[in-house]
Image (cartoon, rainbow over all chains, first blue to last red; front, side, top):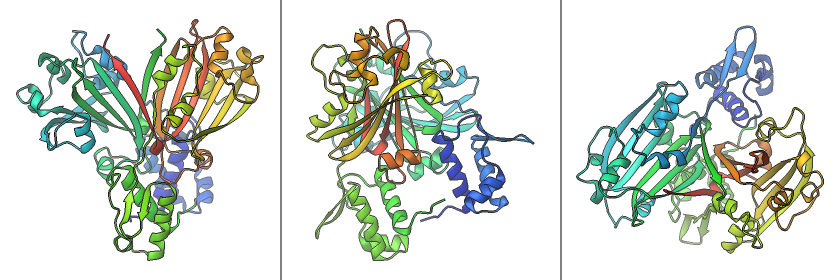
Length: 250
Length: 250
């Protein structure tokens, strides 16, 4: 097992305190001398650790004033809006692109389309027969040029084989619209939210720093016959995302 | 910084593989000999590591057959149900107790009531004036005798000072019912869901194993005047909880 180097351990401890809220945005972080003493390490090690946290956008080093926890603005996701907007007939933007550009940041994504035997939990959710195939549209999304999250959307191959969904490239009007045109508008969705530590593959793909959990957000969309027609799996680095639902008593 | 011992490091690596799904429920985990070789450690270290995972309920050691990843059933939370059930006039159970006993497990909780100056983010959400006070009802919840999650509910002191909410002990009909009786039924709620690594305090209180993230679920309840009357902060160990929302197109 790879053991992390000394500076990474110091960085991990400060990072943990920031994510845990013990150090809040705007707070000054301990001085180099304090960190040297607390961890029994050299000034050089402390500087490497702080350099790492600066690269991650967690802290801001200001000449003469000290080092501060940076304001982080997690991307606010509103799964309900996205679902409602599906059939409003207005030109719709990708919900992610919309949320990002609304904050004045730049959004970008890479899409890969392939035909696969999906992971078992996805196959179950799509009610596929044994060995049944799905089209998966895998997105890796970027904010300001940094990898930000992934969204893998699975569709039963039987349903979408002859449509744009199974062809490479972006679908301007959205894959959900294509499902409608195929006679399978999604009228109901079940959203499951959980969290865990990332797989090594996810860490690599999303360039995660050690100690960053991911939120797993899975939406299953059902058509009017209650047939599952889409399973969307999002992997959201926990430090960069907030999911919000609003409920009203009717 | 405390460095974890060798057996804890081996345990952490197997735990990570389980949480990440690389080792799925029912899978046999590598033999002692395999683990000794993979980590360059003694048999005794491997046994200590497996003992730890067994204690956590992650694995099952079966004589002669080997060691397997245990089926875990995360507690399914349905925040919408809880909100709807609020005013159905039927004798209502605590949603947590209900979910747990429905699975044939035993639920228990410890409640502490105190008057505090709440953390800044809670004060902001409750729209309290500077230095404003809140009553907090802190719950530590147990399933089958094990600490499972926490739920801290904050109420503006002005609102609830003379009610059962500010007195110690359980409220059989629920604090939300008391809010209704005080003329502040919650008609709208905003749920924010995020995740992070636990604070050391949370790790201790919830007896978390290293490497277990927590889901932070915050509900703000608003009355008919759109005044925030309750902020409920749940800390949910990520390996033991799943949050589900259902959406319908109207």
